[in-house]
Length: 318
Image 1 (cartoon, helix red, strand yellow):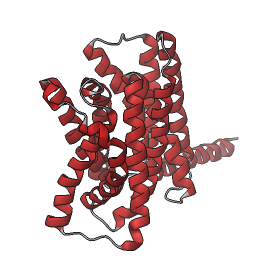
Image 2 (spheres, rainbow, N blue to C red; image 1 turned 30 degrees about the horizontal axis):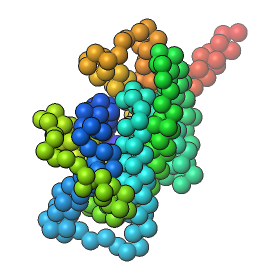
Image 3 (cartoon, helix red, strand yellow; image 1 turned 180 degrees about the vertical axis):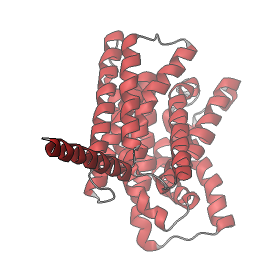
Image 4 (tube, rainbow, N blue to C red; image 1 turned 45 degrees about the vertical axis):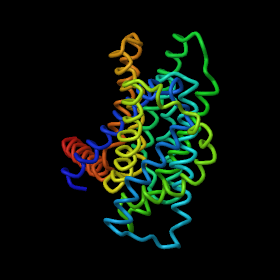
């Protein structure tokens, strides 16, 4: 991958991390006071089918091979149905910060799944980076739990399960990029997923009192649809053209850090020395995982040659 594409990929990953971090707080403006999690899923699904479906079916006129429908179904199940239901239902029950912490299970699951599916090769430095990032996240979770008076277990568990679902999606979707455009992948994913989600959220959608919506609630819902759905899904899939699923997944470690910064901006969190240190661990882990394996090997062999040369010179002098 060229340095230009590498810079573009990490720019996209930073963008998706920021959208994800903002989504934890902004979603709670509309949910559940104005609209339930199940109704949000219907709105997200229907709007995405209209937007991406119109582009794929009528402008690009892409067609899908029936042999690939099994993969599309798995992507829809893990990336749309399981991911969205557990995320929004969990976020509705827990805090924004807790939810952002639970999502950090993604990189570990992606890395392990990608090795088993042979989409990626085992790499010690990636394992090290994930371990460092995970350590920072666990310490941040412990620190946050000590500061909190309530343990929202059900919501935390649902968001954690959502991270499993999203990780499986990232590991599953990549082969489709060799054949189909991202717009088409999203359109078919949501078309399949919407069929499953509609019975789940239909009654909740009908019961929404749209007249009750304030300007803030409408802006919150607009953010959920345009940024947290359209932009986030497109960016999360297109970036897999440039980086591996484990690198993409590692950026979820940034979400607790970014979500905390957003919470500080809103005045709902206090900064501490511990949070700064644990956030530094998270950033270090993301950096190590993002280093290409080829660069690590070149550096290792280059340093090894230098050590061997020094050793030979030392023996010669003796």
